[in-house]
Image (cartoon, rainbow, N blue to C red; front, top):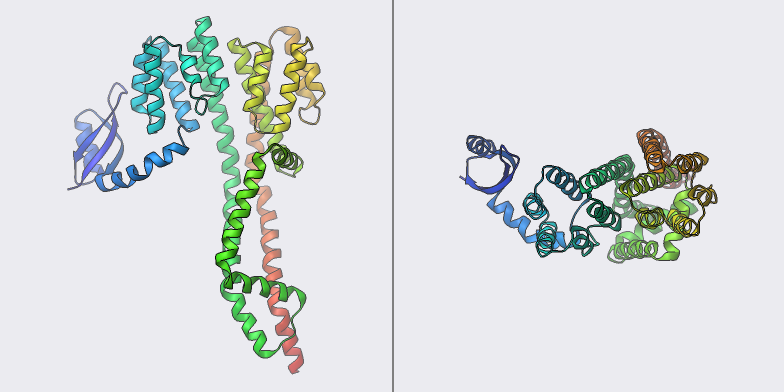
Amino acid sequence: MPAYFYTAITATGEKVSGSEVAQDERTLANILREKGYLLTTATTEQAKKKVLSFGPFLDRFHPASLTDKLLFTRNLQVMVAAGVPLPKALDILSAQTESKSFRKVLLEIKKEVVEGQSLSDSMGNYPAIFSELFTNMIKVGEESGTLEQVLQQLTLQLERSHELRSKVLGALMYPSVVIAAMLGVGTLMLIVVIPQLAATFRELEVPLPLTTSIVIGLGTFLSKFWYIAFPALFGFLVLAFRLTKTKVGKRAFDAFILKAPLFGGITQKMNAALMTRTLSSLITSGVPIVRSLEITSKVLGNIYFQDSLEVSAQRVGKGEKLSAALKSYGHLYPVVVVQMVEVGEETGETGNILAKLAEFYEEGVTQVTKNLTSIIEPILMLIIGATVGFFAISMIQPMYGMLSAIK
C-alpha cells in the first residue's frame, strides 16, 4: 500500500501534517476521521518527490499569492480579536500556509517581533510580499491600538481586490482560449497542409493570385524555418513585454488600453474601484490624506491613474481640496466621483463615501464582466469566420482558375 503525506485540520481548527499508509485517499480520510482529523490534502511519496524538486524553484518567483495574503490577514485578525499573542499567532499561521517562502518570511517576522521590533516594521522588510498599503495600515493600527479593526479593513480590501481580479480574469479566459486554439490550428495548417497544396499548384503550373502567394510563402517559410520563426516570435513577445515595463512603453500601452473598445471601460472602472476602496481603507484606518494618496497611487495598475493621484497628493499637501484636484482629471474620473468626494469633505465622511463609491464601481465591473463574454463571442466568430474565409478563398481560387482553363 502507498504511503501518503497528508495535511488535515483538527476539531479546534489547527492544521496538522504527517504520513500514513493507506489503500487509497478514501481509506486515508476514514483513518484520519477516527483520529478526529479532517483530511485537506494527500500526496503519495512519489508525487511529493516530484513536487519537492520544483517547489523551491517556483516559490522563488511566487513568494505569496493574493490568496495567501488574504487568508493570512483574515486569520490574523481572528487571532488578534481572540487575544492570541502576536508571536504565537505568527507561528500558527506559518504552519498553515502552503508556500514555503511565505512560511519562512512569517517565521522571520515572528523572530523580529519577539526581539522587540514592531509588526509593521518587520513586514516592511519584505516589500515584495507586504505593500506600503499593508505596512502603513498595520502601523496605524499598532499606534492607535486598533489593530483588530485595521486587519478587518485590510481583509475587506484584499477580498475586494481578489474578487475584481478573479472576475476580470474569468471573463478573459474564454476569448483567450479561443484565440490560442485558433492560432494553434492556423499555424498547424500553414506548416502541414499549405506546403502540400503549394507543391500541387507548382506541378500543375497554376497561376497564383496575390493572396494565395502570400499564404503559400508564409506556410513554406514556417515549415522550412520553424526553428528560426518560433524563437524569433518568442523573442519578440519577450521584448514587447519588457517594453511595457519601461516608462515610455507602459505609458503608451496604458493609453492604448484606456482608449480601446470594451477594455477601456473595464480598465477605468477597475482603477476607479481600486482607488476608492484603497483610499477609503487608508483614511478610515487613520492614515493622513496626503500619505493615503501617495500609497494609493502605487497600488493602481494604470500609469495615468497613478500620475493623477501623485499630482493630487502634492496639491492637497499645499492646501487644495481633493475634489478640486480630481476635477482636473475628468477623462479618468467621472463627475460623480468628484461630486461625492466633495460631499465627503463637507460632511467629514470622506472614508465612508469612498467605500460606497467603491461598491458602486465594483458592481459596475461585475456587470461588465458578466456581459463581456456575450459581447466578445460574436466578435470572435466574425474574426474566425473572416480568417477561415481568407484561407479558403486563397486556396480555392487557383483551383477554380484551373477548372476554368480546362473548360
